[in-house]
Amino acid sequence: MAIEKTYLMIKPDGVKRQVIGDIVDRFERRGFELKAAKLIVPSREVAEAHYAEHADKPFFGELVDFITSGPVFAMVWEGESVISLARIMMGATKPSESLPGTIRGDYAVTISENVIHGSDSPASAEREINLWFGGELA
Ligand code: RTP
Ligand code: MG
Image (cartoon, rainbow, N blue to C red):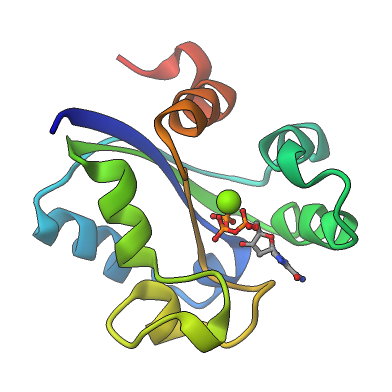
C-alpha cells in the first residue's frame, strides 16, 4: 500500500451537466486530497497525446473531437491506493457493466460520453499529470 497521485478529468459532458461538485464531493468523502485543479478547453495536441494509446482505434477521431468540444475539469488527487480506488468509484467503461453507485453508473448511458477519466496505472498517472499540469504542481 502506498500514497499515490492520480489524474482525474471530468469530461465536457460532465461539466455541462454541472456534476463537478458531486464528483469532487465523492472523492473528498472517500478521504482523498485534491492537489490541483483547473477548468480548461483542451487543445487537440494535448487531447491526442492524452489518448495516444487509442490512436489506431476507429473511435479515436470522435474521442478527440469530444474531449476538445468544451471545458474539462482537470484534477490531481492524492491518497492511499487512489489510482485503483478512483477507477472503482468511476465504474466500468461499458454502460452495461457500470454499476449504480459508481459515477458512470449514476450518470452515463453511452460508452463515448461517460463523464469522467481516470488514470489506469501508476505509469499512466505520472504521464498524464505531467501532460496536463507539467511543472504547475507544488
Ligand atoms: P478513460 O481512458 O476515458 O478514463 O476511459 P477508460 O479507461 O474507462 O476506457 P479506455 O479503454 O481507455 O477508452 C478511452 C475512452 O474511449 C472511449 N471509447 N469509445 N466507441 C467505443 O467503442 C469506445 N471505446 C472506448 C470512451 O469514452 C472511453 O472512456
Ligand atoms: Mg483509459
